[in-house]
Structure formats: structure tokens, C-alpha cells
Length: 280
Ligand code: SF4
Image (cartoon, rainbow, N blue to C red; front, side):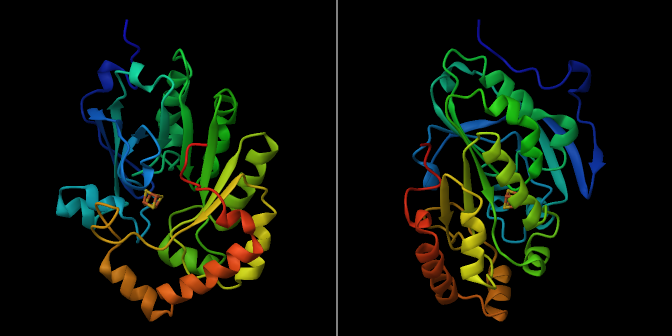
């Protein structure tokens, strides 16, 4: 019999709206969570997104451009839909799965909905649990360390995009602080769960040498960095022009990014090795 995931009771399937933080929440019981992976995730078999939309609402997020309705693009960060369709699951057995390509699977709503947790529980029931990489910027991922440690291959990729809280507050105002993300990375490593650090996209860095040293101290398995997603390149969508203009205004150009990248790669050689987005 096909394994299926019961995400919420039948009685709850009718769209029910409520608000968590600044995000209006709805349920989409038939929205598929799993799609074939592509673009910068081509090394994976599947991308899995438990939610549609993301209450973290980073200003530079490219994922909002996957949304058809203009109103929802403009209001990115103020709405989230809980997805309900994970199956058929057999195709995920032994596959490589990237969780969180277009949403943060540990955004605030997950604390109560626990959809990501139920997804992990279900994947662990497969004959060969998939190799999973989870992308997040939330310490809430620590809650699921018990499940993650049971996967034969797992890595938590934490996005740590800058060394400056004031920069973080301008571009990622609803996200956990940089310090809390670093604490989460340290704790995961202590628990034996490999961590990847993604300085992606790299926001303005104040002290690249010190930043590299701090990141090195997290003892991550992989490190990676990138500039912002451009429109219609490897990606179907890019960062908003207004955000790129604001970055230029504060002196954060691609040239500055390259200068900081060189320093990070010298000070933190692991940054230049391997690909943080590979499932190995
Ligand atoms: S956490 Fe990720 S998916 Fe969510 S808004 Fe920020 S960049 Fe987009």
C-alpha cells in the first residue's frame, strides 16, 4: 500500500484562516510538496517544500517570483499556506531530497503546525530513507535533531548572510538573529548533525577576516557563498531590482562581494572546497 502522510484531519481540510506573527495562514491540502529538483539543485533528485510562502519575508527572496499572483508577490512575508500533499512517497526511497528551496521549513508556523517534523517522520518510514539536506535560518531545526540523526545522510544548511545585525535587520527583519543561527549551528555539530554554512546571498560584510574566523569556529562540514540570484539565468527568478539598487546605494556592489569572497576563501579554505548545495 502506498505510504501517505496525513498532515491534518479531514475536519481541518476546509481553508481556515488565522494569523501567526504578521502572516495570514491558510491550508492547501492538495498542493504538492515534492517536485523534481533543477537549477542550482540539479545534484538532488527532489526539492521538497512543506509550505508555500515564507513568513521570514526576506526582502531579496527570489522565491516570491515563483508565485503567480502580483498581490502575493507584493505581500511576500505576510501569508503562508500549509501544503498537504506529500505522496506518493515510494519515489523518495533512497533519493536525494533538498528540503526548503522556496520556503523556510522552520519558519515560525512550524512551531505549532509541525509539518516539517511529520514529513521527516514519514521519510524515516521508507525502506531506504532519502539523503536529506535541510535549508533554514531558524534554530527551531534543533527540535528535530532526534529525527535528523536517524537519517543515513543528513545535513542542515544554515543561512548566515552577514556579520552585521543592522544589515540583517534591514534585509531580513523577521528572521532570527545571526547570533542565534550561529548558536544553532554549534549545537547541531555538538549533536553530531553535519552543518553547512551558506553565506548566500552574501549581504554586506563589515569585517570579513573576523567573520571568517567566527564561521571557522562553528566547525561546519561545508561552507558556501554566493551573490544574489539574477533574473533568468540559472534561476527562474531573481532578486528585486529595488533591492539591488538599495545594496548599490550602501556600497555593496558585486566588486565588493568578490573582494570579501576572496578574503573568506583565504581565511576559511573550506569555503573554496566542495559545494554546500551538493547532497554529499
Ligand atoms: S527564509 Fe528563505 S524562503 Fe524565506 S523569505 Fe528568506 S530567503 Fe525567502
